[in-house]
Length: 174
Image (cartoon, rainbow, N blue to C red; front, side, top):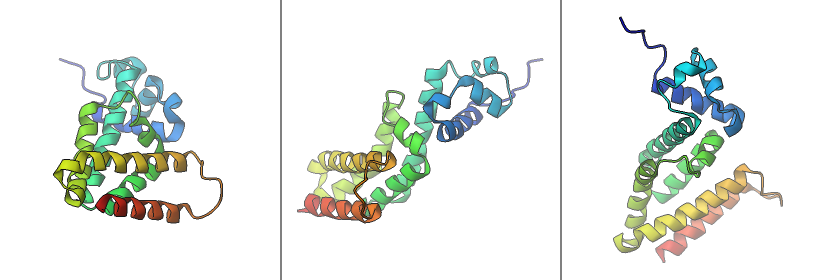
């Protein structure tokens, strides 16, 4: 009779996402995940090949969680930007991990779909990809700076985000 399963890939990835947010990428180890899911570290290797595969699985799960939030925002670029920012604030380490080599290109492609649809509604199908890239570059840059504490000159960062978003959308629509 085979040994009963003590954990699953889903449990491992969920634990990995939690550890990532608490301890950062350096704290996301096979041992830390094993402890969190209640198994010995060698048991994880039955499900996850190595730490690189763990990082990839956690990055993909983060992207999929973001995609669900973006899909819920429908085809409204303002709602998409706010959902993107909300996700980054709720999962800053997962957000950062999405922009590393660990991220799945397929998952990133799925996450881009709501943005490309919304951009197409604003600027037309011919320019949708360029507009989506512009939007993503601005929002990601703003959020990376915000999360790292780079806005040190004072002022209201929420207002700055809304200001930038408004100006960007106005420029894209022109």
